[in-house]
Length: 103
Image 1: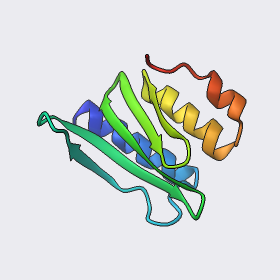
Image 2 (image 1 turned 60 degrees about the vertical axis):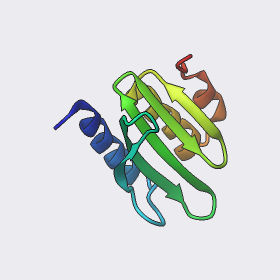
Image 3 (image 1 turned 135 degrees about the vertical axis):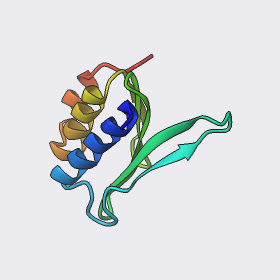
């Protein structure tokens, strides 16, 4: 199992544990980029209020993208999960905004 696949599995479990899989579950897959590269992707949602994806480019580049809040890029899976927990589970915007982003 690749490192990106392990990270993807961690996100699937995180999404399930935090009730971010309400409508269609935590769908895991991959997406092919225009340059031929592939990224791992996990979808998440909360009924009527949240639709998003986690895009895993590598262990030091993870993007959380939602229709409601745009895209945020992090330097680790742990930072991305902390952001998701603060923003979408605890509804703590200040805590979510304090997590460092990847430039």
